[in-house]
Length: 231
Image (tube, rainbow, N blue to C red; front, side):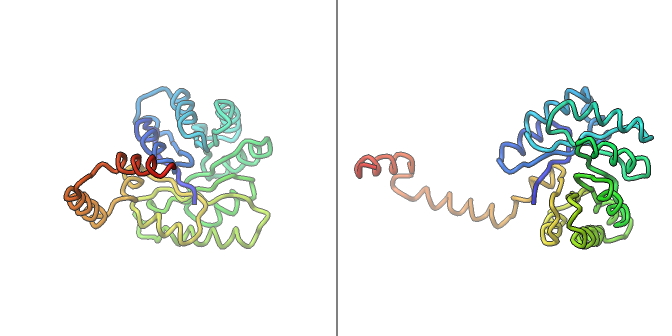
């Protein structure tokens, strides 16, 4: 499963990228507005950091405007994926843009029929919003399961399922168990994936015990051993 970061914050993106496991990034108008920076410059910088798919969202509400914006956004970087809303105008725009070789991430998916239309329009990604469904008392992961089942029936569809609106690490685990292609995470959730109190406790115990060893300089010990053995 690919891991994307759902943010426009360059500090967060650089930190996540430094782990060596970040595959891409998703943004939206709200995330861009939160940073208070130039939109195009922000997208370009993210593309340079991530060097993978970076979703940049159109803001037009009609297909012609979405297509115009999408064509321009795609010229910023080869890594840009044009993010389009999952309504009738967005489907029209996705069909046109995908036909021109522009990758689209069709977003705000809340029912499987929408995902089916996105695939038929040639979307590179469809983004089911699991957390927002959970918020209104609907099991968000059921939507992911249904989309994956539908896509499995039609191998001609190449649309990847990108799980979005992630609230906690269990969303990540559940998405992976279902076989979702991609998950996009807020930085806080991304960081929590590696955290567990027993891990912290174990590290602390090992560190304290190691202080009892006569020579705690591993680098020096290994270096001397290698030199002595001609390695």
